[in-house]
Image 1 (cartoon, one colour):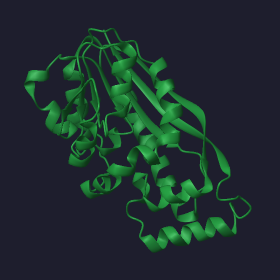
Image 2 (cartoon, one colour; image 1 turned 90 degrees about the vertical axis):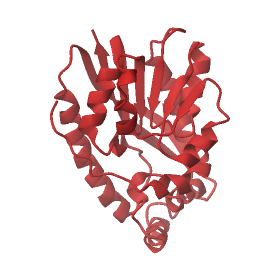
Image 3 (cartoon, rainbow, N blue to C red; image 1 turned 60 degrees about the horizontal axis):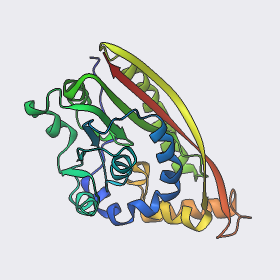
Image 4 (cartoon, one colour; image 1 turned 60 degrees about the vertical axis):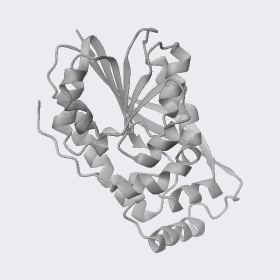
Length: 258
């Protein structure tokens, strides 16, 4: 497996502060993403599934109910606040560990029919260890699906645009890394886009809550200055309650083992 380093590690405090607003902040995005994800899944009721970086368990619960899974989905997330919110979910089994900690357990070798990682693999502390563990934990014929953001499509202030440029460079490296993973089976990788909309007031709230990882190092003053920049330029004629139409672009990578 090729070596790969992760430069987008986020402090645990970031997601602790985000946890209680997470589903609200991502509501519009997930309303469009989840149906799209469901179409890419081929699950049977007896299948065993793991969701890595599962957050509040929203996606896992939806999958469990939609496919009538007999086994709970293993929801792996290291954040205690996220896991506490996931407690209310049905059809899941909560595991408070990092991906590296989880996949280091030899008892889960060839345990899963499917492993999902939605908007989470860029948080792997040691990607090489995590990916090796993923493939070791899949059963013959198992599938690993990874989804990453290429672009969220909404207006950004200059400092955020600069951050997105760094993200785009890292995404190019990620694509190359994923294509270089050697395994026996079928590999597919494609960019998928879908429309979504958000009001201007909600967008500013998302910025202030640092809903995306790229905002976590920005100060309050930097974010407020960025909002002022948008108010004086790109969004100056947009009302607070007016919807801004955006196009979200994701990278969906699928590994199907023989």
